[in-house]
Length: 361
Image (cartoon, rainbow, N blue to C red; front, side, top):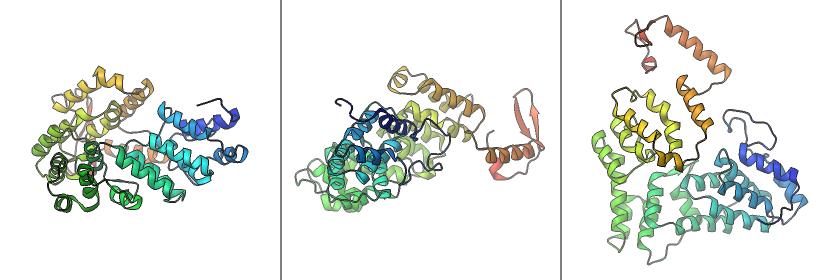
C-alpha cells in the first residue's frame, strides 16, 4: 500500500465500518442484521470516495489490509464492502475488488457470504464474478476442496452446485481428482462415481466422501463418533439427528478452535454434558487450557469475560422485552421449586411440567 491519497475523514469512516459495522463512532450491541447494517443504502462513504477520487483503488487496499490483519469484528463487513465496490465502482475499482476477493475469501463460508452480498447488491454474474469463483475452485488442492465441499454444503441460499453451474467451471481433462469433487457437488455421490469410474487419483477422494456419506446416514452414535475421530470431522459434518449425542460431541471437540469452544460452551451445558464426572468436561477443560490453541487463537480477554458472564447467567444478553418475559417465566417456575442449599440448585416440587421446562438450569 503506497502513500495514502484519501482524506483522513473518509479513511476513518471506511475503517470504522470494517471494524464495527458502523461508519460513525457509535456501536449498538445486538444483531447486525436486525440493525440493518448491510442494506443496499449502507456504507455511503464508498460512493463519496468514487465521486471525489474516480479510479482510485485505495479503498480496496484498506479493505484488503483490514482482512489480512484480522482487524474486523465480523467478516460480513469485509464481504459487504467488497460487494459495494463492485456495485458503485468503475472498471478499475471492480478489477481491484475481484482481485482482493480472490485473496480474502479463503473458506467456503467466506466465498458464499461474498456471493450473497453480490446478489443483494445486484452486481451481476459477469466475467469477473465467474473468474473469482473459478479460481476459488481451481486453486485449492483436490483433497482440501473435497473437505470444504463436504463440510459446508450451502450457505445463504446458495450451494456449491449452484455456484459451479453459474460460473461454468471447466476442469482440465487430466485433473481427475478435482473433477471427482466437482461432479460430486453437482450430481451426488453415486452418479459421480459412475461418471468418473476408477480414474487415477480419485480413490482417495471417493474414500473420504464415502466416510462423509456414512456419517450422514449413520444412526448409531458410537459408530458415528468412531468415524468422526478417524477422519477428524468437525461439527459441520455431524447430521442433525446426532447433534444431541454426547459421544459424537466428544469426538468432534478436539477439532474446535478456541473461538468455537467459547461459542458452544452454553450449548454443551444445556444438553447436560458438563457434569463433574463427564468425559466431555475433562476434554473441554484440557482444550481450554491447551497452550497451542491459545497461541493460535486471537481471542481477547474481553471475549473470555463475556463468555463467562453469559455462562453464569445461563443465557446470552437479552433485550428488555425478552428479559421481562424470561423473568416472569422464572418467577412462575420458582413457585413450583424449592432451593437446595447443599447442592445450591432449585429442585422441582411437582412431577408434571411442560417438556420445554425439562432443561438443566
